[in-house]
Image (tube, rainbow, N blue to C red):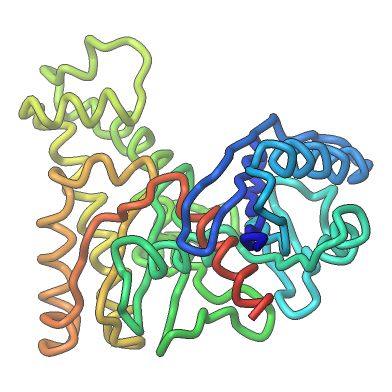
Length: 316
């Protein structure tokens, strides 16, 4: 008997990663390539087709590819499988990705926002497994998020639900690329860590960071773990601002679990207590006590596993 397998891909502005995934979430084979950057989206579709063929040829002969799920860094029309807006890949705006890939690969295709897919992945096999209502926050170059309420991913009528990074935490604060000011993305992302460290250096003349040459989030983290006052202050601010945003979400959505992932979450030890203090201070008492704030477990595989889960659901 053939064993059902799906393809799952994570499409980012830099890399395209794909895997063949079984119904238990096992990654049978992985493949990746640089994301083609061309105004002709046909190049991207061809790259996806090539990786899908590689995965198909690599899996055991008693396995059959039955569906395809793809997570993309974009605003998605989930029902139609269309990319509405891809800020870092504008050449894909308006692309009927599901229809195009179904024609090329010959299996049903599901398209999802990358952060929502990661939330689904963590809910399937990761930190929020078995939890009905959870929030996933990813701290990377920006701040992203995915929300699951009563077992259902929250997408919104325009596909923009879960844009946690654009909750305003400082009304007169730093300008954001979204057009607003004071978004939490400007205070709690990897980019924000470097900006705040640069801005505060003049107040900490003895900081280790002044001796490290090029400033990176990792340098700031390492300095903080060594007790550097500047780095400690940067992560205090990061955690406090993120805590303000999460307190709002706790009050509005009453989640059971908040999962935090992404590269900048590596600074967990330096920011988590400040984050929790703000949630405790600002959110309603019982929901704040109920909401467990924990680290993600699946790393970079969260989005692929979430996309795979959606592909299996579509088959069912």
